[in-house]
Every structure is written in structure tokens, then in C-alpha cells.
Image (cartoon, rainbow, N blue to C red; front, side, top):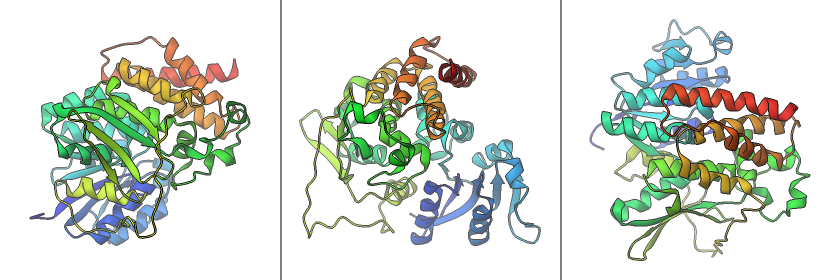
Length: 384
């Protein structure tokens, strides 16, 4: 890189944001000019004290009230979503890392794309809900969307081996979560503690539940459809328990290119920051000296019905992604509160998607309305 890049990290106190700051610590050439956090205000203050950004944004007005006095420091502290939008579109920012969880991350990611920024996208829900609209807007503003999800980063890296029109299949790998060997009967009795115990990745509660139901892969199917402009029929999923092969791209000549690395989010974050270059970084390297076995297994769509729903939603487009995502967020919260069963999450999501008033060409306002409707409908579904 010929000159330093200015980075804003939206969601800097989450796991992705913290890993991104590890990358900045280890790799030269980056200036952190903006940070945002929601509930972990003490951590946000510590990050600001270390990196001295121009902007710090607390998105929760109540929690932001406990941010320490920074009048003698070199940054400006702002509160609320409007400030987050201003940060995402600030003229001196080169890369916006969109790492705010859930649909809450969509407005700021949209604003950054609207402003023609390079967006390192770690928020899969943004593309699930509004991928069609975001891809279209990015083409108009010359914004660039670089994936940070490990699977989509792997696809993006593998696609450098050929042209987009030479891709015949995209194959997403999935760890299978903690229940890949459970029977359908066992799925009915899964507890919250069991579902939170992911065998490979260390992630938050919502992402852990999504991995256990394989809804995370359903969301990634939809995300891949819009990120890489491929129809759902060209996307497949395989179960790979070791989480070393992060995804595979098959080209028309029969060659399949895979990206392999130990499971660590710092690598895809760094690639989004340094693309098209590769630099030494803090991620662990693959050690083949002791040998290893890598398995690739077909998924069981009956035991993991969320996957089948993901393929259908990817094919539908329109408002289907917004409704599936909102229904799932509500269902996961209900499961964590012991209000529905584990196997009821995917069942509820399918029912909500199937009964919603589908719109093939929604506006952004229509998508937020569909999201709101799906959450309300899920509440009625649970307590009917």
C-alpha cells in the first residue's frame, strides 16, 4: 500500500470490531479515524484512548451517558444513529468496516455505499435484507463491497482465479454446529446451553444459535446470491466440521479453487482492508506438519430445514430476505428466553415467510416495513 488508509469501525466493541483492531495493531498502513459502540461503553472508551480517532459514536443514548469526559482528548464524542451516518460518510474515510449486528447495521452501511465508500461488510443481515438494492446502489456510486464473513471472503479470494462469467458453482462450507450428528428427535430437546456451545468458533449468542440451526448458512446463501450476482441454483452447501476450508468456487473448466486457513476472523478482515494486496499479519498459519483429515459431507435438509428455506429465499429475492431475517432474530431471542423450542425456530421462520405479502421490487422503506411486520407476526405466532 502506497499510503495509509483511514478506517472507520462501526461496531468496534463486538468480536469482529475487536479482531479488526488486532489487525490494525499488527499491520502497518491503517489509521483508525472512527469508532462506534452500543452497550460496552467502557471498552469503547478504552479503544478511543488507545487509537485516538477523530470520531467516537455511542449509538445507545442511555449507555452513552456513561462515556467518560473527553474534553481534554483529541476526539469528538457523538451520540445516536444520525452521528453514525455522519461517521460512515465522512470525507476522510477510505474504508468503513460494517460490523454492527443485525438489521441495525443496515442504515449506516447503506449510507457508506451511498457515499461511494469501500465497505468491508461483516454484517450478513445487510445483504440478506437489502442485497439487491445495495448492489444496485453500489454500481451507481462506484462503492465497493468487500466481504468479511469467512465464507464470503473465501469465495471472493477464490474468484480471483478466474472471471465472474467462468464460475459454475459457489460452494459454502458449514461446520454443522454442535448438532450435526443429532437426530430429529434429539433436536426437539436441545437446551440453550447446548446450543451456545459451538465446537469451533467463539461468537456471540445470536450467531451461536444461528450456527446450531444452520440458519447462519441460510443467511449466507442469500448473501452470496447478491454479493456475487449468481442465481440460487449455482449455490451449494457442504458440511465441513474442521472449519479449515472456508468455501470453494468451481469454474466452468472443472477446476475447484478453495481457500484454507485456521478458523480466525482476523484473516478475512485483513484481506478486506489490504485488498488487492496481501501483507504479513496476525492470523495463525496452517500447520500441515502433524497431518490432518478434512471432511466434506452433504447437509441433511430434513434435520436442518433452515437451509432449504435459505435457498428458497435466495431464489425469491424481494422482501423474502427481510422477513426471514426478522423472523429469525425474533425466534432466536424467544428461544434464548425459553419461549419456543430449538426446532421451532426454523418452523416459525418458514411460516412467517410463507404467509407474508411478498413484494418483488421493494424500496428501502418497504424492507423496513416488512421487517417490522415479521417481528410483530412472530410475536403473535408464539403466543397464539
